[in-house]
Image (tube, rainbow, N blue to C red; front, side):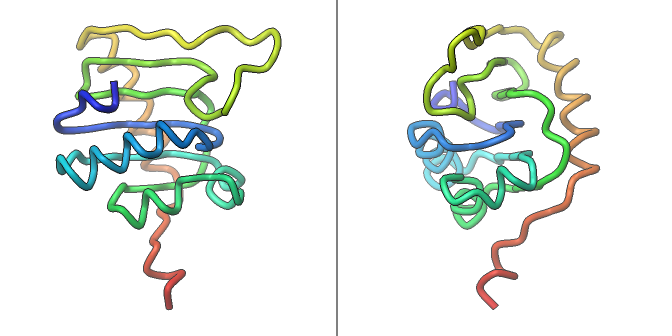
Length: 130
């Protein structure tokens, strides 16, 4: 779904450790000019294996705060929800990732994402470089 994005990606993930997802996000931002908004936890931002900071350097808008769901919304139409967004392998007993389409369902989740995103602390990669 990330590779299909044309205008916007909203991602909420406790941790962002999956290289293939991070690379797809980077391509979307750098190569196609997609606006990517990433919400992760403070631990998810600062963990060594997280791709959140490198995605911020690539141009994604990253914030840390309350990321209570593993959620990906692409172009306010495609929704991917589940534990595989942020982890490298599915732990025993966890449900698989689910994908849905439709603007009504997506928009209901967009509203929640925006609330949580606006309440989170922005990450500015330029501050680290100074």
